[in-house]
Image (cartoon, rainbow, N blue to C red; front, top):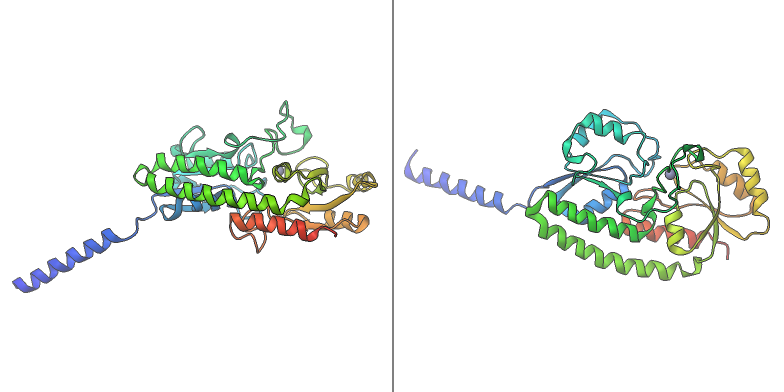
Length: 307
Ligand SMILES: [Zn+2]
């Protein structure tokens, strides 16, 4: 190789190195989320420094999924696990954790973010008693329907990412601060829109909306499930119908993955509109991210309500 060629090769190598250094940083932290709403939040806070997988989609009933080998493989590689907790995932997460044998994401580690330990829990029973239903022995795990809880988890998520990936700490802190600001503004807007819903009475399929109803001052007067996790029975639905009487119940609410028959049965006989609300990102076509999930939740309640 002559000198000229050698120099050209050297310059090309230097140029390639510089352009490689100038590339955006590759994802540093692998996040494994049990539910799509926390996956969406991890993307909000982690931006392009995180690679996020969700174990479930909004079309699945997260109380009951299979601990598939593909999920074990993903959890094995994860740096951070984020789940609703309070035994919502008790049927599958302990199996995944055991089989993945990944020390970084075990309970008590910085890489294990249990939402039920971050947000104020509602419906916490004074004693654990599964005779009261199949699920929710440690309080209601469906915490994502109050945006204040999302804000609390966002702040904790940023702290965890900073500890796991200190080099990018400033980046996570900035994104968390931007999110806090825009989310706070969105909450004010949602509360203004929902003001007329205060005091409204509703019936819900599963006990999945207590955080949203607590937030907006909506009253839940009954559930299609007799006990959480036990499918609605004809006897219980008939009792519910008889119990409505002259109470002004305005909506029957369910999630997209729940069967429509019980809602429709009660709606036809009572004249109360039945509505599907997005409980997670992806649960309706409109709920594309966390912001549009709450937009759509309000749109659907305001729209389904009789004038
Ligand atoms: Zn539940």
